[in-house]
Length: 247
Image (spheres, rainbow, N blue to C red):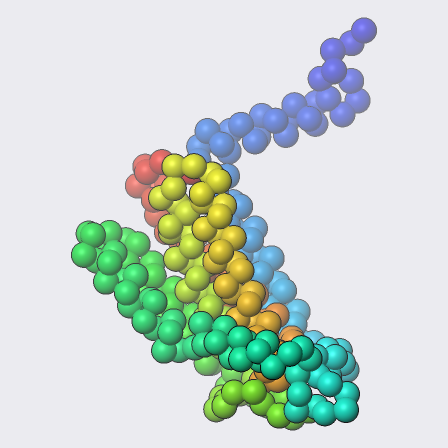
């Protein structure tokens, strides 16, 4: 009987195994994984932006937004009264004030701890994400939803959602930094899961309160994740080139 690696497809499997081992040995799995994630998130954002500009998502956006309201009273979101209050509290977790406090607190800690590289990563991630979000709002110029009364005051344009974008940038960046310090994968996974959950809840609250179309939030998540992952990718490549060990 022939050896499994000599059977049809065996050489391909052996080549894949060798390539995987080589990438792992040289510490390239993490950078390549981040690059793939950045590319996917950026593609999702660009696809959504194109569909929104062409008006292809309006029917779906309207249907989803109305599905969260009482048909007899569009000013009343679905669920008991306390759910709306809870959503207002949650949406504040993605506000400029709260994210600025969290970001500045994290930056101050990193600088005091002498972690200048991580501090620069946080500053670049938050600052760049904020600029990208505002520039894209002005470029696409999508108005806020007018189907239902807004649950909280809003002043800026709608696409992409600034709350969704910046919560993804701040919470995912800080979550990745904290996860990288954990000796156990279980703890790292938990921290990343909390960061993703916070980001998700903020975005959902924006749609529930009627201040964003669902595609605004999806695009904000994609943009924020792409930018946060890109900053992490740059940091990882610099560490790799400096000879530091990667996870």
